[in-house]
Image (cartoon, rainbow, N blue to C red; front, side):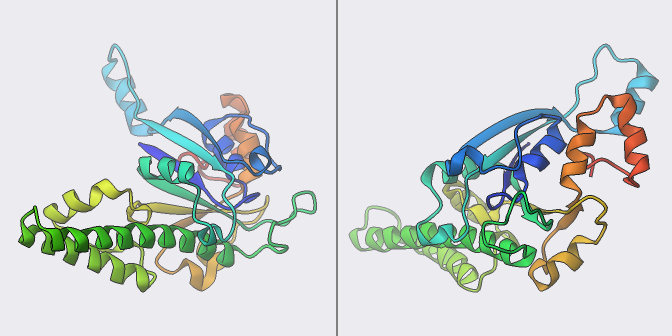
Length: 265
């Protein structure tokens, strides 16, 4: 599985990346000076069941499931006005799902690029950019299908079926409903899957909170979080704990009242 970590600048994407992977990339600064940067890391998926089976059956080798996290830096608010950069779209279209990091912590050292911390606003901003990108893709496809229908050369009934599919996608996007909320037949899946539509991909919102903040994600996001899967992580604290030796990690988790590290959640 490959997951892209997305979010606005200074939301704490790299902090969450470090917490999930144990890496030690620099944090608290504009990624690449505002340029697009993508940093991958491959880690084992924690699974205590597999560990217990290994103890019981003593296999020659235990192979854990892997997950690739891509830290995608450089996205800006209101990217939809200019469009998400092509290199980022190419990367986003390749991942299996998104972790959308939303900032909910205050820091005088790392001021918010919009001047204030508002998780609901930031969530909506990024989701809107993804919707606008898909609208452009769908509209372009409908234009090409209309031309193809006039010229002929392919079965007209097949063209009409494809037009109906993309009109349904367009209607959903115009109503600001992500395409992942729709159901697809096997034929529709085959037709749509090759277009890299971003709002079809599953997404988990990670609300990056300050140390000691245990407020549920749904309370932080308010109405903006309706219908969205979300959880909170004390990003900076989890990052620091993830970089400790394994024997110390459990003790620190217990001290701070964290049942499971973020990578397991």
